[in-house]
Amino acid sequence: MQDTHTGAARLRAVLRAPFTAQAWAEAAYCLVGFPVALVGFVLVLVVLALGAGFTVSLVGAVLGLLLVVGSTGLARAFAAVHRRLAAGLLGERVAVPPALRPTGKAFARLDARLRDAAGWRSVAYTLVKLPVAALQLYAVGWWLTGLLDLSAPIRWAFGQRPHPGGEGMPTITPVPVGGGAPHSTAFAETFVAAAIGAVTLLAAPWVTRGIVAVDRWLVRALLGPGELAQRVRNLEETRALAVDDSVALLRRLERDLHDGAQVRLVALAMSLDMAREGLGAEGEPVADPGRLRRLIETAHTNATEALSELRDLARGIHPPVLDDGLPDALTTLAARSTVPVELAVDVPRRPTPAIEAIAYFCAAELLTNVIKHSGARRAVLRVTQDKGLLRLCVTDDGRGGAAPGAGSGLTGLLQRVRTVDGTMHVSSPEGGPTAVTVVLPLHA
Image 1 (tube, rainbow, N blue to C red):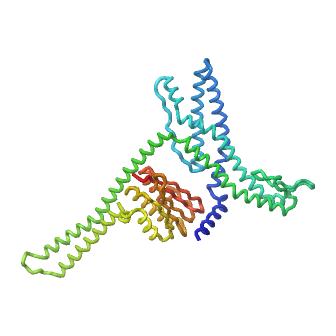
Image 2: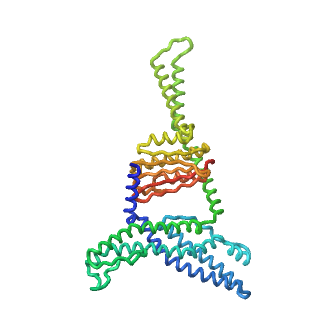
Image 3: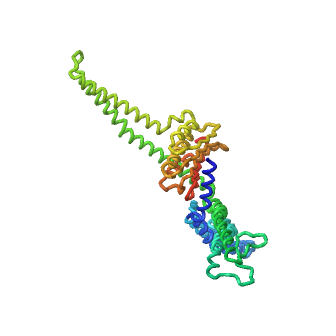
């Protein structure tokens, strides 16, 4: 049954791929990115080559260094264009490297610009981008040839036919075909070309996605801040998130105590005061035993409810179910889900309590998203350890479309995960399936 559901979900994904917004956005990125890559490659390479040529000469060394510096600035400008294209069409957003503002005398500023690591990474991306963009243009060819072949019967019907005695209407394919592509010499044969076009069109989004994945990696590796600068920025952000999270937790506890348990305890104290007054002086008979009994019952009810609310608050800070370890806690969580959950947990080394709590809350929030938003019939929760990392993955066969910031609680999860230097990856194309992977260190 599981294999049937998985196979059906994959088949739906293949058939829907050419009609998804992601596929068209990736195709548009390939098409628009090529002329930008071509112009950037030519300009940066020419300026850099001229600068290098003048630099090795004794007469034009200064001019050569200025041209080299100009090539890094030019590459930064093209890198900014590529970042905007990647963010707008692919949703691939990387932080902008800090602007270079050198100080000091002329040679000190020149030296700082020559040491501009972000500028040289931009140069590398601009030069490498052209062959990648050529492959992306080839991916666009899959779309065009697929549409062209799919329209072969229509073109034949409207009079686009081969001359008598000719080879026939050619079928265009994006890959070399042994012996040549088939030619249509009769109307019925055009449906063979249409079938080839349909297969090509179904494959086009996946070819495009594979080539674009290379570009995504280059964008992340070369167009963002350097590794050290990004590490410092991440630490600053996670520290701020941890402080904000702790402040929010304290405020929530204060509000819950003030509005809940504190009110119950005040009512308890008032009931006990009234009961004490109802007892009268020592040795005197009780004037109204019924009223005194009701006051004691009210005090008992308030005490019970206050204890329950305090227990709930403590459970929100650290779920008692985690006392026996993460596998037992996740087993209980999966058993309570209204959507059937397949659970697989392999955690030979127990993480620290903070990591266990974050993993548990992530699993709970992700399963809640499956129940509320996905329309899924089943879900899979897998937790494994690998190379000192805890990997938690929740997949479902729902409608897809989940993304941080889309009201699914993923933004809060991402912030919680980043406080311990963890990562979260979301794969949720329209039509599904959805897979959310959280990677955490074993020690906070």
